[in-house]
Length: 266
Image (cartoon, rainbow, N blue to C red; front, side):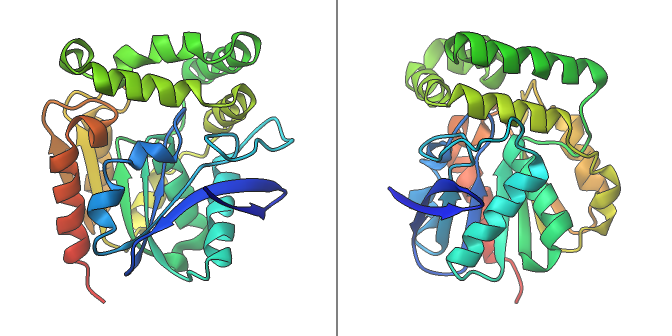
């Protein structure tokens, strides 16, 4: 494990491969091992940096009780500074997509391209905010097991749940490793995140949008909205995949990302 102290906490990260840098940002309530099926494929041609966001995986939780998307994006920028990476392709899945959009808004000159997987630009509804507040309290009072068990059927397709126990176990174990205080801080941050819909037409870098056809958390319609608003975007819908499409349809996901990266100009 490699780590660095930035912004008053110890951040763990993977840095592997040689070539143009790609930063991959995990979702909630996961960690950098979310990308375990992407890193070997991508690192043959690219330098892959995959951080554990504050409060997740091997990274410390901060003393703050909220981790805003802007703060998480600033953490990524600080890691890039440490690694002397001025500009990179920024990719994220789910909450990682929220962080990627926040990163673009704050540091657009540092973004060569965007990869937005199973995510959305809209802010939470009032009902969703209340649900996140309840989940934050549940994480702190009861730990992650109940949250993990409740989320699993929403994250994966019914076929995966019934026929691919290795993926179910992998995803559940990832969630159980999350620090309750880190989960609660991120939930509060997601509830307060900005609506980035107005940002989308201003995105001028090549953008790949990926989504599982059966994603119940951020449905295909959310990705279609982003695709229609971002002139430089390409949309790929992955059949027989839910919210963690990179694990359920690994080959198709990796092929789409590699094709996108190889066709970038400059």
